[in-house]
Length: 264
Image (cartoon, helix red, strand yellow):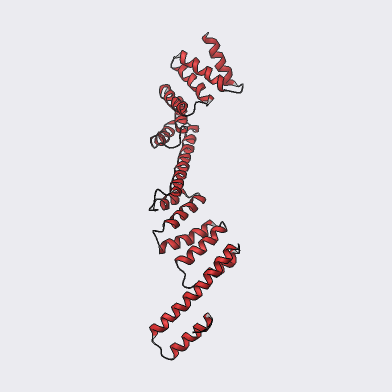
């Protein structure tokens, strides 16, 4: 049936002209297309491996009909080119063909992370069947951390705008969800200080120390709060600890020394 793809096509036209059954012609065309696609795939893959991405794209685009495999090939080339939006476009086309492909779902989620689209990243990572996959867990943890950081920044903005109640609400939500480590406790303590709720502030500062006992300024804040609560013994203890950890001289260290001297 001919030595080249073009020979095969010419032969198929001849068969059709001679009245060969249409199903036979159709099957023959299918065989020709499959062979032609296989050649194009191989050439496109070789071009990709050699870093000739534009040429590889041209080869992939000649494949007819386009489908799952060609979409993945094109997406892969765009990903090598760091054109993540175009890569996503073709990975999503591949997903339309096979919606349950865990590898593609994971790749799509990762690309959305690259594009800082955490909402879509979360949508696609949650569709992966194997939720215990280390890469899935890694992406989920990253998304949670970034979301927590975004919420924390909102709370700080509210605090700086003196909208303390809104700041408290956001920070309490982060603490309830166990997101953001000790930072939500630290900023909620500052918020409680601004609201004059010194007992609540002390409780949150103590939570920070339980996680990291090396943050000097927390001890200073505890000293001020215990002073406000008229618990002068604990106030002085915290001022001393603050001075032990502080490596600079500023208004805070001067005040701490002054309070320690006054207590004698």
